Image 1: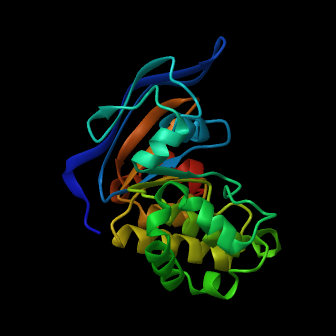
Image 2: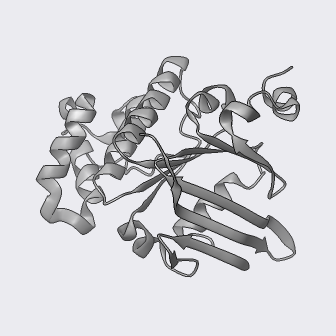
Length: 240
């Protein structure tokens, strides 16, 4: 999907998150246009997960604003934000491993169950492996299949923005490629993507724009095509 750079769907203004005297995020500014794939990169502890959790309402900003579709959502709860169209797939996938694949998909459609049949047909068409595993307990799936189920569960909701926290972590090279191809396919279907990722080589191939977080602050941002060749990124992430 070609991003509509004129339509900013999510905006973060001067957001600070503190845990007591410790700054997890400090004066963060970020914009995402409709249809973009935006990647957050940074080392462990840089603040990537905190930023995603703040957007979904799991962490509350000490200062600043989160504006989604021209509404201030900084103080909303996760349930309200999810229903309004933002979905977070956490690092562990956010699936229920003791439930079946089908039961996980049903939970994804909890607030929109009247549209369950329509949505599940879309999901299993997009992810045929889930159709074969509907009655299988989710915890018995491979790591890559569990990530696919997490995507499917997200699509059962009324999402417009999909946020993913380290989706490639712990996966084999084969599944890493598949996951990023899936992200690209979802973007082409109209989803706006915000992705926190340490696999910069793969993520930068698919990103429209990149934000670099260090110690809770944005230190670089710009078009992915420009930042791939930035000396700071090449040295830190590409080993050159």
